[in-house]
Image (cartoon, rainbow, N blue to C red; front, side, top):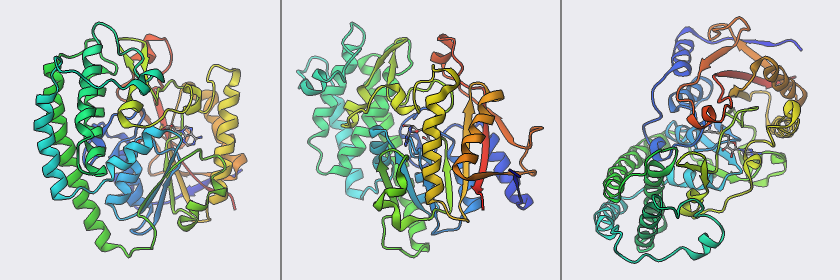
Length: 405
Ligand SMILES: C[S@@+](CC[C@H](N)C(=O)[O-])C[C@H]1O[C@@H](n2cnc3c(N)ncnc32)[C@H](O)[C@@H]1O
């Protein structure tokens, strides 16, 4: 099928190129609330949304993960729709788009002060017996890990006393961020004292981000006519079959689909933390008060060890067929995709897109490779992929598609 040559003005191309290749850390607004695996940079999301949509347009991210697209969409006055099967993603989305009142901020600051006193390992903690029985404290009961587990239990106890759901959610998010900092991919678990100190640092960071987000969202809201639907919608479900989803109807067709799907053959743990090497824990779900789905293949489009990644490409085909059914002639699909072995996986991936009803667009003003596409190196490779001798994908490509007419 003949590809489609896109055009854009010089200024837009320069901004997009810079955003695609930027090495800036993920930061600003509420983006720093959690290190969601394989999240893309807010600068990339912002540049793509500004380049291809107008205020009031709908931006859909069908694999929304940590919610980068929706935070940026809201701050830029676009309607944002996010879909993800991960319950952690649902929690993060809500926390990142919460509009706190001045009273909430005040209450959360004094919660921080009170919690510092309460996080004393000599105090008895209410054990999370149901979560324990369900295995959510796996690998948190060892000689070096139990203090962190107990600090989490003590902090969760204090969160229950906060006045409303917004405050409780933000406090949980602060605890989640601190527990991730203390446990995930770390050789040495920090002391109780360091944990307490970091919790307070994170509380102030999260509140500053939440206030910045509130300011940006309210400014943007004033400039865009309300459409009688929520400005941000999150659906916890699979994108497969999304064409039959009634909650989505008022938002269709989206102007932009901006996303990064699970990557072919690339090892990413969306639903676990790795404690002291390879030991995995589902504790983030316990802290977020959310239930986990299934094993890793649930989150990554199937078993990546099967020859030719057959399950992966079958699931991707279903997902993109569904997306084609809700797209319109004006919908642009922009994806950032990493490949373990681009030489055969990229053509297979493009085949899936074509069979689903899309045709590729390339922009010569963005291209940096002989194939006419724009590739970027991936910063911060995950060490666990290296230690397992697996690829963590060294290259990502930005793909543009529209419906084939
Ligand atoms: C690469 S991550 C997205 C990261 C996101 N761009 C961000 O900035 O945080 C891919 C996401 O796809 C989700 N996912 C996997 N299979 C899915 C499916 N069938 N439907 C919807 N989401 C799915 C995973 O849970 C994961 O959060």
